[in-house]
Length: 260
Image (cartoon, rainbow, N blue to C red; front, side, top):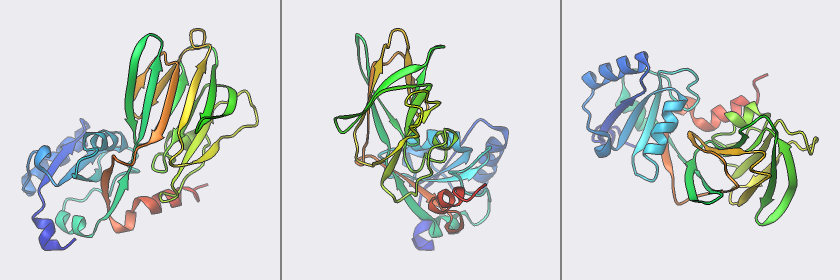
């Protein structure tokens, strides 16, 4: 993108409630011309990864690009915070389009619920007893009964988040693979998860759901007392992120695999 064209882009600024993020928001608004987010070509998101996820959900399926700058804790999805040469950074930034998982949730006697996840869909036990979950992939039962604290399906972008904490694999961004990872599995004891093609349809059925209740979480959307969950990638929906060339998302994910 040329510098001249970049300076014609309409910028909007958004910040988390963190004190540092709000302070940065005020400084940037005083320095750069800006418009309301609904009118922007690029939204500058100020905060940490949690706020970045919220921003990505907000602008999902729109043409708005998101350039994050870290004013939070982890900042894996964020660029380094700098106030100068913002237009130049946007001009040289590399774009990545992320496609979400769509989660369809069934609950006994209630309507079907739907939610989107950029990082992962996780199923978690709600009570003291372990969950019992049957897992099918593309209509074929692969795990008749998983006794566990939970199980998750992660995208490549989300593979360094909860999935990594659950000892799941880190996935290269362009690999077109999803990670199916158990959380504290008791039976089958030796099962450590699976790598699935990105277009796989994964169905989770909750066994003994009244006795062993389970919640389903898509990023920050939680639905409790589920009976079945179907998850698939939706490539008709996408959000475009911008990264500085020296800190692009693909390199960060690769780097994570070599951290002891």
